[in-house]
Length: 360
Image (cartoon, rainbow, N blue to C red; front, top):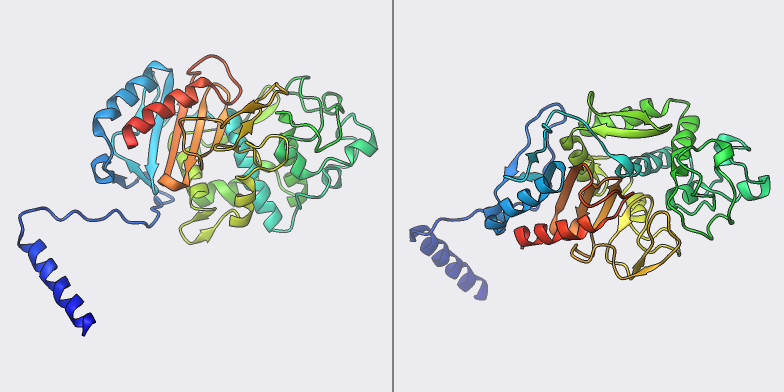
């Protein structure tokens, strides 16, 4: 009897709504949108549909332009939020820009793929793949360094000798796992994957990741910068990568990077720097450490950002923010916004202040 009453009430409410003059607003779908692989088409969503403060969009864009930004974009559940995709300070949508250290997370993703394929294991020592003598450390100390140490920035190697990752520059400071230091030695993971897959790094990356999510072709490519392999692409290609990460490693119905691996990668990877995973920066922790420093700072990485936000951060304020709770992927590329930096800067917190005014 109760079910009949509920049905009758529902019918009355539907008829009432249909007869009113108020527009019926379609709810925002919870389904993640993925843009086509071989097309520039990308669906959009209006800020008004999300209940965002549209009056704060222009102040956000003005701030970005003032802070030497080249490009910016916000995705909500995969769709571009209209008005946020912007190119400024002489940049354009078809021009590439370098990811700097934000591209470290591409190496993370490839490590997860290679492990899933049985080519590597993060707990294995690096010398299992590269042979001995890839550092200047003694064999005993070199054998302590695992692939996981490279992704977690706790290899124990000297971080003060510059970007060169030849054996002469990879010198022992402390045992692996006992010291966190931001170091370009992570690029040896690219060599590990190339050796284990019997392919070039570029070929393995292109076939296993780039092409599968539509980052294909020029200008999405690796190039050498100061002896390091650095990635560059247009802004939408970085957004595609961020979207795949937001979707827990999937692109539509295809699992690209294992979800369990990504869960490990975006949580604290060691007990020294709480705010660091596998080359991902983590917000919402009680303390953090920064590049070229052995100091611990109390508080969360970016106070204005949501606690569950994790980020790929690169030199001169290259930013890829992922916020699962708000279904957001945010990209910022350009020149330094607030003084030369290697990853985090005060620009992050200021930018999130502007973003919050817009999205809340």
